[in-house]
Length: 464
Ligand code: GAP
Image 1 (tube, rainbow, N blue to C red):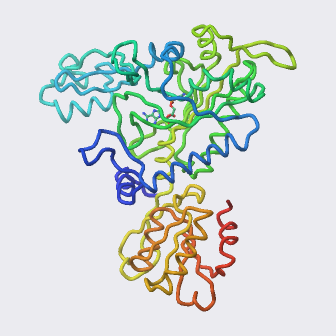
Image 2 (cartoon, rainbow, N blue to C red):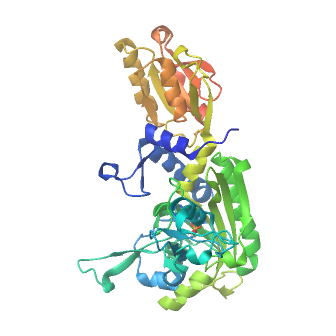
Image 3 (cartoon, helix red, strand yellow):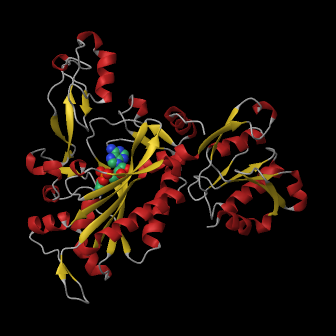
C-alpha cells in the first residue's frame, strides 16, 4: 500500500472539520489543535470504546475523573518536580531548542540538530574529521528542562499560589486509591481507569497532533500483589493488542519495543512501548510500565496517610504494586486515521469523477463520526419530507447526517471521505414502495429496505 503523507491527513482533517489549527483567527497558537464537529465524534467514539472494553466489560476495573489541578505535594511525592525533565540543547546562534533523547558527541549528532545546522548555519560550521567541528557548532551544553506547566490560583501570583497542570492522569488514581478501595469493595488485583487532559511543556512539539503541550491520556493503574507482576504485565500487553485490532490500527505498522534500563522513566522497572510507523518515523503510540510500589510508597511517606492493603483472605498486609497500561487519545486518533485512509481511482464511476482520486476512510463502524447519511435523490419536497422524517427516526439511535446538496455521486464521495458506513437514499420509488436504498461504504452494495423495518435493519448492520 502506498505511504500516506502526514499532509494528506492534515488536509483532510482541516477540509472536512475533523481537526483545525487552534486560535486560527489570531494567527494560531503553535501546535495547538481544535477537534471540529467530526473530530470530536471520532475522539469521543474512541474514548467510549476504550471505556466499554476496559471499564464496563470488566469486573475488576472502576472509573475515576480526578481534578487536573492537584496539591503541589502530589508532584513532589511522585518525583515529577525533581525528575520529569527532558534533556535540552540550545543553539547559541538562533536560540532554537532541541530535545536530545540519545547520546550527543561530535561523532553522533542527533538528526534534528544535524539538519538544523545543515540548513541554517552551514556556513558558520567548519568540517573536520568528524561530521562537524564540534567546538564550532555553537551549541550550549546539554541542560535538564522540567516539563511541568505552572499556573497560579487566586489573585496573588506568588510562589504560595503556584500549582501545576497535571502531566499525567496517573497520580489522581494513586492519591484516591484508598477512597476507591473503601467505596467499591474491590480486592487486589483491581484497576482504576481514567481519561483526561494532561499538560507538558514539550521542547519540540510537532507532527500535527503527535506531540502537543495539551493532550489526552486514557490509562489504568492496575494494583497487584508484587509476586504477580509478570503475569499482569503480559495480560495488559495482550489487552493493548486486542485494542489495536478493535480500532483498526494497521498491525503491520505496530512494533513492541522493550525500553532499555537507562531510558526508563524515573518510576518504572520495566516498560514496553507500543510503537507505530508514522509518516515521520517509528515512534511511541502507547506504553506499559511496571511502576512497582513507587507511587503509593512515596504518597504514604509524603502525606503521612497509610496506603497499605490487607488481603481479606490471607491477612497479608502490603503496599500493592502497579502495572500501568497507558494510551494517548490523540495519538490513537492519528494512528486510526493513518490506518483507515485509502485512495482509489473513481470507485463510484460517476461521470465527473472518472479521473479523480477518491478518498475512503475505512474506519471501524463503531468509530465512524457519522453512522448513517440520509440523502434524498432530489431537492423536491416530496422527497425531502420523507427523508427528514427518516433522519428524525434514526438520529434517536445513531449520529446521522442529512444532505440534499449536489449530485448523488458527489454526496456518496463526501460520506466515503469521512468514513460514514451507510448512506440511505430516498428516491421517487420510495413514494410508491415505502422503501429506501442502503448503500454500504466498503462494498458499495445497495439493498432495498422498507422504511418501517429500517431501524431494525440498521441495528443488525451496525451491531449496536
Ligand atoms: N502515566 C504514564 C504516562 O503518562 P507517557 O508515556 O509519558 O506515560 C502516556 O504518556 C501516553 O500519552 C503516551 O503513550 C502517548 O500516547 C501520549 N503522549 C505523551 N506525551 C504526549 C504529547 N506531548 N502529545 C500527545 N500525546 C502524548
